[in-house]
Length: 223
Image (cartoon, rainbow, N blue to C red; front, side, top):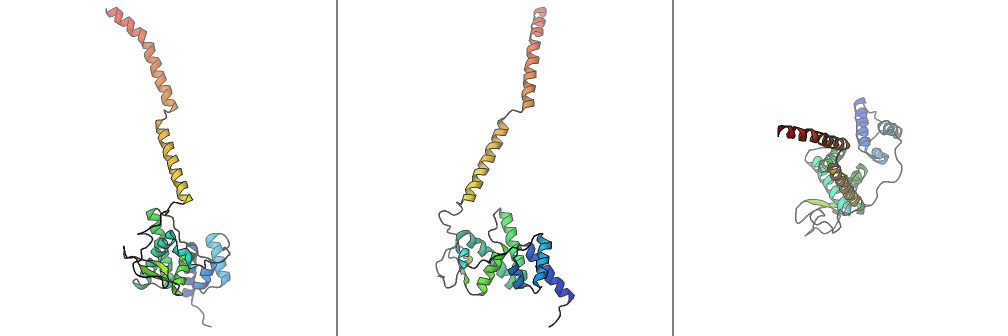
């Protein structure tokens, strides 16, 4: 068995740290890296401060067919394929860099990131297994994620033709209600007279009232 050099081992550690910081599960680390499981668990605890979560990975390709998930998955996979085919990145570099670009785009546009790293990695695995394909939209000509052997002609993507209740979720309704309440509080705070200002106005009124008799006497003397 060939022994890895120190530089190769250090590069593997840095790749593991980058994946853990992006939210990779242990199954992803074990599939993409050659480090021992014990070392990866220790790295995970050092980076995250907790033990790695347990449980099964996503196993259904149907999740990527829903409206919002399909848009985010298409955005990420188009970025991944560009980095891999055009920029000459390796699979792992294209995965991490493409996911970082996806997060930056969501942050810049103010949208919530629907895809976590595990979902993004599983998406790439589904494409490698021949379960999914990229289909061109007949309106915007952009490519979106679709099932293998689905129709290729006159297909419209979810961004060009969203469903009737797209975005009308309970979370969106709660956010809209919270924004309305916040705006109402701002309006009410602007209309309220501060307490110190009210005392100042009352003091000025009292001072003017006290000066009225003196003013009247001066006017009588002048006359």
